[in-house]
Length: 98
Image (tube, rainbow, N blue to C red; front, side, top):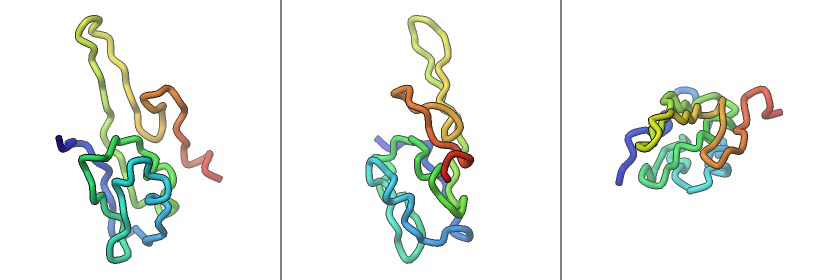
C-alpha cells in the first residue's frame, strides 16, 4: 500500500551527502544521480529522521499525522521532526543535531 505522506526532497538544495540514507531506518531513501530520492515510498514510515538530519535542509516532512482511535475519539498527534515518534521517543530537532 503506498502512503500518501512521504518526505519532500528539494533537489535544488540537496547536496547528495547521503546523511538521509544513513539515517533512514527502512532504507526508503537513496542518493540517485547525486540527489536524495525516496525510492521505496511504500517502505517509508514518515519517521522524519531524514528531515531532522539533513544538513542542507533539503528534506521536508510537512504533513502532520493525526490518528483518531475509533473507541475514544481522542487525537494522537505525530508532529514530525519537532515532536515524538510513534514509539514515544523524542525525535531530534535542528537545534539538537550538533
